[in-house]
Length: 391
Image 1 (tube, rainbow, N blue to C red):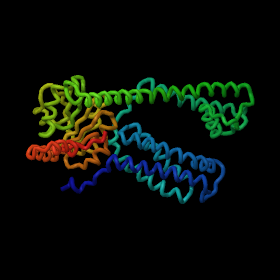
Image 2 (image 1 turned 90 degrees about the vertical axis):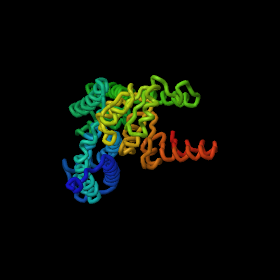
Image 3 (image 1 turned 90 degrees about the horizontal axis):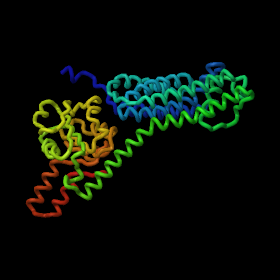
Image 4 (image 1 turned 60 degrees about the vertical axis):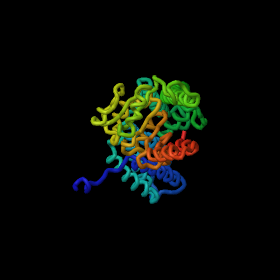
């Protein structure tokens, strides 16, 4: 009774959609703020802060779209960055002193509350290696070096008078855009500009390569495995269906429906099953078992399954929220995902990331009709009706 009265925490999906709404509102508010005048005209430092908030609010909005993408995949780093950026959006709305910024402030405050309530739902680590961390630190270091140097040598530059000018000069020079509106007037300033022009592009290129290179390589490797598996399925091999002894398959759940499938796969590939202690005892020998309830698969359990290196994933009918699990699996691997449906609509499961959806009841009905009527066409139709293919 008390459990029913206890308020439910918002889901991670609600948090992601709310952050997306805050991002779009921040972008729109920033654009409109540039085109309109504030309700209260101010000068001095507050006036400069208002001017900065006009364009930086839009930048924060686009950054929130990126962190929302990371939150959708469960990254803890994206969650932390989102909290910081949403806090900045609140500050932007207050500083702009416009009636149109009120929705941004209200939405951002509500977003902070939801983010606090959903903190435990985003626990996936980013696994940055030493090279990637070094690249990130180097690009931050170059930015700080350029800003501090340009401001310290502002007397040697025509067009650098404050910190904003120094940041502008650093970004324009390091990105090799070079508008030419700020230029050095002394030898010291020229040498500094040369050093920034050399360090900036090299650091950016190294950072992009170290961060995105491994991701692209892993994606191409998984795509190659999938292409090879598809060729084997069409060409056939002695193991049938493209399954080889070195293939690795992860199964979530082990009820009466999926256990026979696991037993059939056990002698033909490497199988890892995520299930509870009671169901684990009924699994055949040679199957790796990870004890954990599929209905509440935690981030740590998903990491233990090493989905990045698997060739196929089966989501059983006892896996609880199959749509959420399929989406979580899809965010970690490009392997083929098959779901044994348990009342979930096939199209919803496919949108979540499933490549194929099998309904056991339809399989039974179509196979029985084919056997009773002896109609080969009905038997052939059973596979199309029972398994909805999207890949």
